[in-house]
Amino acid sequence: MLALVSLRTTAAFLPSSVTTCRQITNTRAISTILRGSSSSSSKPTTANIPGIGRDREISSLTVPQLKTLLRENGLQVSGNKPELVSRLSTLAQQSKQAKLSEMSSVAVKMKEKKTQLPNQGNPPPSLKKQVAVEVESRKASRNANANANANANRVNGFSEIGVPPKLVARLDAMGIFDPTPIQKEAIPTAIKGRDVMGLAQTGTGKTLAFGLPLVAQMMEGNINNGYKGNTRSKAVRGLVLAPTRELANQIAVQLGTLTQNTPIKTFVVVGGQSINTQSNKLKEGTDLLVATPGRLIDLVDRGALTLSDATFLVLDEADLMLDMGFLPSLKKIANMLPKKRQTMLFSATMAKSMNVVASSYLQNPVRVEVARAGKTADKITQEVHFIDRGDKTRKLLDMLGHPDHKEDRAIVFGRTKHGMEKLSKKLLAAGIKAGSIHGKFKIR
Image (cartoon, rainbow, N blue to C red):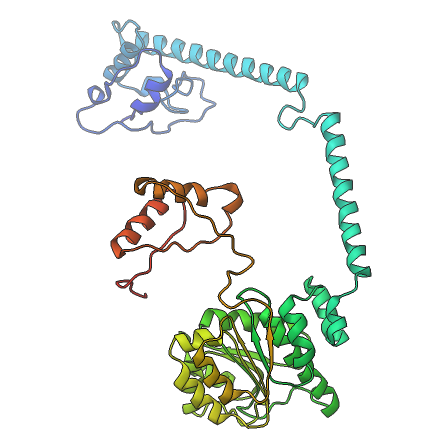
């Protein structure tokens, strides 16, 4: 039987090995040692020479193989086979003893190290550090308790403008205590069922300004009529129109939060989603429907819903809907609604065309205006930086990478499609998630 030697392992452990694998045999590639007799054999073996193999008798090797191994380790290769076997056996024993000695030495050192530094892997914090952690923990606990007590004893400002206790409790749970100016002006009037025309900047709390009166009146009607959520098939009780799907989704989320744990059902229909799925969900009817004008008309034309039962209508961001060309759609929707209803219209500006919408939708409305039309939103800070053209990208990267803005989102406007593509690649290269939208942008 041919014994195969692993050259790679032999080279790793024997002092002066060389690449002589092919010299051992001309008929077979050498890769490992074939295991032979039991380790309890009294004959010398190659088990103690790394790379030769375990439990293989040295005497079974051929003379050329014995000479090759001796030559690799700088030993004499002359003599007959018994002499060669004896020399190799001595080498094996020496190798074994050296390896055992090395392992013993390492074990002793590790034990001494562990005895001297028992917690080196995870050293305990110093007393100063432990005290600091405990102080911070107690401080955080006191602050949390103080905030909880303050909120528990805090008078919610919405109760003072006519919002029902159940909704006030819901606002408490949401962490909303103080109404914004548009909410203070609009809610007391709207909650009485009057039509409202509200003018306010974007981001001033208009959703709650119409959402709270809408939900409050629905809840009151439910109590008076014993309503348990059984809406007529395909019917809608309250309709909220928004110009974009993003805004519609935001409104639906906030209204859904207000109506949580109540029989009032909230649903949203926008473009970009399966119209068949939306049709199926509307079969049982819904209390509050948030929609974009185009998708709403598509669903009405399909017979998926009816607006004849809608007693509440809200037009949010009405000026934007006009800018986007939704005036014909709004007129068509107005003709589908019952004449007796409450309508609330909210806009950031009051263009001349808004009078056309107001006269079509509103009846003797109360006008509420809390900010000058066209004024920059209070939450927006405007800054002007005078810099060279070549420094604009660097300045933008500095601003986006600033620690105060790392979690912020941004929109950057540019002059050309090519410029926006180039800028987005630079932002991505700097580790900032970015994308470009322009005339050649393709929706995937």
